[in-house]
View 1: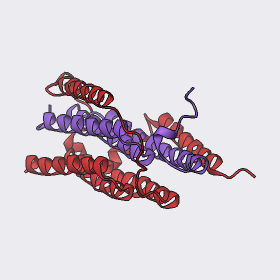
View 2: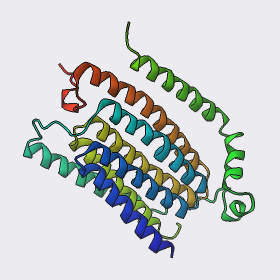
View 3: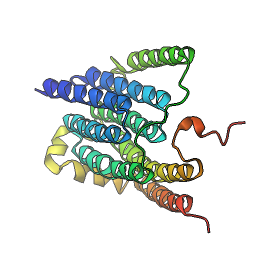
Length: 169
Length: 101
């Protein structure tokens, strides 16, 4: 059952990501991206990370894609303007580079059971307390400093965005 | 090892390479930005997979922080796009050559 869901969602994720790349219209590409985020969220659910799946939908499919669609709307981008493309030499070089990257990634990851650690997050604990309760216990004790640093980063990002986009008088 | 661990890892490798292809072949800056988001999502799948395999909490927090950084990046990146569009009238990355000499 899990394998069937995994194959369906994986195929969906790969197809929608390919459509993001190959759609000529920027708005279509953004809408395919939303579908891709939803299928990734289901993959997180299959990995028993419910909180992350919900955050994926809220943060990525909700806020970041809204940002992007607003930007497309404001800038009125329909089509990419046709111009000089890549030469065949650079294209084939890029393709070879990507195949090498793919082989490296596969050989590094697949089949590695190197770290057989047993940490504190067991399925039993999750069933008992729920994913969010267990995570927030760690977030507000061991990971408090990174959490605060991230809030500073977000504030800096918002201020930076306003300063950049403001018209100079 | 969890069941189907290799399937999850292979899937994320495929997604990462798709994102990389998009980031180097497309010329619209917003599509390049979305391809970078695809690559971040692929990395998130790896983090969650290994976090589940090791029953550890670090991978999940790494994903949380990746999401926060992606949100900040979206805000700043789109401000830069608007600025570039105002100055250049297009979002073609081939024309972003202010720092080239």
